[in-house]
Image 1 (spheres, rainbow, N blue to C red):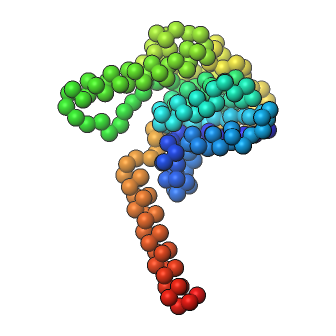
Image 2 (image 1 turned 120 degrees about the horizontal axis):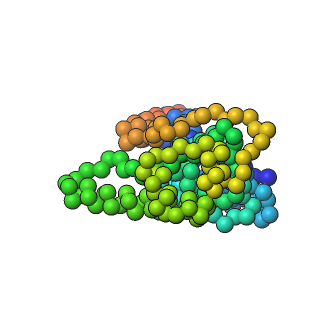
Length: 220
């Protein structure tokens, strides 16, 4: 059996190394695809989710990678929030009795410009909401209007509520409670931290290269 762990922030492939650099948990689409590609044809795959969400685009890519794979069983261990909740809709899904799903509207950080730009951004966000909601409508059979209302008021659902809404196929039994990490805390990675990590990596690479040059100079 293969296991895919979706933990911490859901991030783009290009940002994953920064989380690794700081020793922070995160999952990118490549993490998911690598395991899917190396799994045997009929191998059972468990997808374990404990994430507060993150990048919309990374979440969509994970969803698409998992969707339609009949060997995949998704298990929500603690939190499937925001983009992670969308990933959980990609196939047969079980939820721990202590776990939750949180769905809300897509948000945009770092937006700038005049009121025309802001109006355009608002339209983009509405379209993104509809795209994310489609994962829930397909899984549950609920209407787009109903899902968008749940997103609009930021809805937290217990395991029993998730089952009632049709977002999961069953509730796990005899499971140990998961540790709640990164649930609705916002993405840890900011532009400032990204730049800091890149600067530190460049400095360490410079030190390493200088050391190698010194060793080469002395024939070591």
